[in-house]
Image (cartoon, rainbow, N blue to C red; front, top):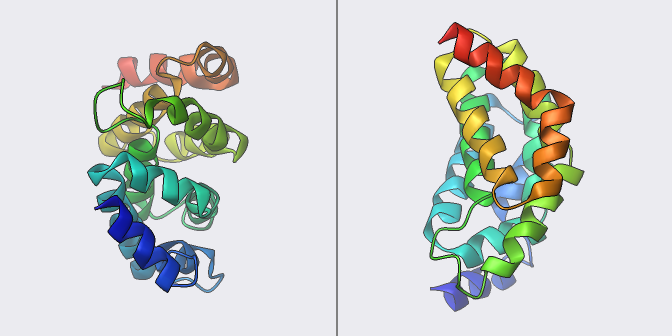
Length: 168
């Protein structure tokens, strides 16, 4: 499965069309949703897909999509779910991709995921689904990573969690 995916990516010129779609400036709402849904599906299948999506610019493209569609709830939800899947392992923690989890988490953090997710959660403070998906994403980013646990907590993660508990 992994080699077939890599072969497909090579045939596409080393790029994932879903990432290219998200990098297009005049991106439609529907196209953004479909691109994120496709990457989320791949990310849920194999850890190798998660690695490939990160290495091919999927995280940065998703952050840009969140910024562009910050007011569009259905796109926001799909982007949060896709990023959440990238920030966790699909299989047991002792597999060959486990050592790359921390790198993916840090790639996501340095791409600005924490800041934009906290902003999206503020924008959709009455949306149960955005709040839940945002919390799952931040929780996945912090899993087994004490540096990110501290950083996310200090950047507003604790306040967001407290607010969510009070609201819902």
